[in-house]
Image (cartoon, rainbow, N blue to C red; front, side, top):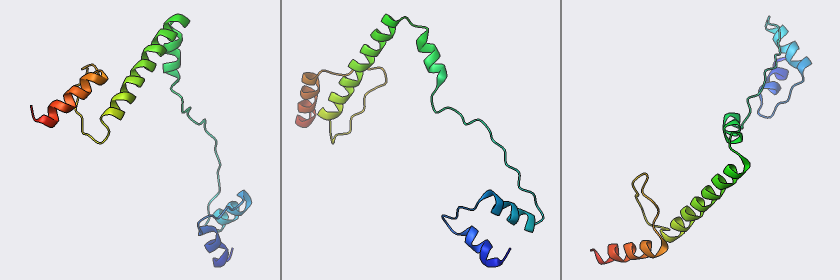
Length: 110
């Protein structure tokens, strides 16, 4: 195989066939071996299995609670946009009114 052919294979975007790769490997005294392995799932199947242990009613209640919590987080993010807010882990989110009162208190310097 010529140096020009090897250079073409080294270019970005080169897409050699298996036959071409075999010829390149043979030219260097090697043999091409291809193997296939199972690709890992991007889904955490243990979480699915854990959730399936709950009844449909329990899963719905858990979903509803998470949905409500995400809504609270979205509202808190919108209300505090542009501000740095630090909340201790586990402390419940404040209502809109409480956030507004806290903002006013901070602005006054109380």
